[in-house]
Image 1 (cartoon, helix red, strand yellow):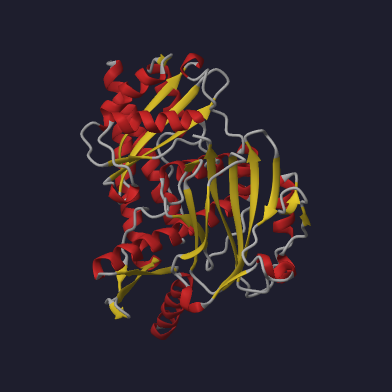
Image 2 (cartoon, rainbow, N blue to C red):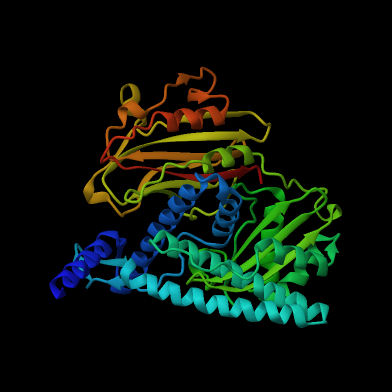
Length: 471
């Protein structure tokens, strides 16, 4: 009998080991400290991709569509790829080669899941206390502040849950209140503003004690386009808080997003630290006079929605696009230099399409020539060998100029043969571009439709939005 129980125990342990999820990433730097920080940023990006993959799996189940949209929206609006809350990471000893240090960090679900589970329980307790406090208070101002605190707890709980689920954990307890319940309660208590400047000044008090804050441009989920409204919000907040001009110099990040309602805009402001923890927040209800003379509707919203749906994400291959200015909600004005970079964690090949919505409402999609002198489709294909993995590779640099508008760069990568994945193009005689279609949605469908489902082949995609304005 003892031998039987021992055999069962060994079998259970073997199954647990097989089911364990391990994510790893390597960082490089001029010092061990820099290499460690970069490794942690890389690991955060791997977890980010893993969470996205989990959200897409949930989206395939019809009953979860509403929840999935809410989760995905919170995840995109709050988090930055390089600063997710990571618990239980382990680091290798630094290795020095050719004057540069490298460190590998890993996150094993067997170690990490208990830590995230404990954090979940702590947040549940805090939310239960918050719910009791909100229902018992009589003061409007106190109740409003408690609702904001409850909103931050719920959003933190959502992020922890998504990471927990992506690592293989199973959600056992729901939050004591929903995002809609909190949002509706805040809307009932808070006044609606007719003046944007006055509204932002009121909100800035919540962030007045924080130093070295980098305010990002505001966005409308799931778009990363910069509108006139989001540009005005960012520049105003930069003058109202203790701000820095570059995210690399920041101790805190001020992210903002807005929802377009039938009779108002709802602007959400959130302050997060480098570890991904929410530190402060504010919600502003804006009446039409506050934004009437400002362009607030993203032109590329439909394209962004099409790209977000059914992304090609696998658990092992990841591909990223970025610029020297980063990759979160980017704005360029005429004459500014744009340096485009790419990074993959495995040897792979890729191509890039650009989905364009010009300021004059002309739309089209085309393929970027990565090797203009190559023959046929080879001009579109770029290869990343093993020695260049986990490193940023400079692809090209160009100057922002007319036609102004929005370009969504859409990259598809594979560890298999990419030649059959390249969609057909036609040369546009006027522009010289290799056009896919004048309907970006059709181009996106065509790109994904040519992706093989071969066993052992990893496929991934990513995108980067560039907004270019005249001044």
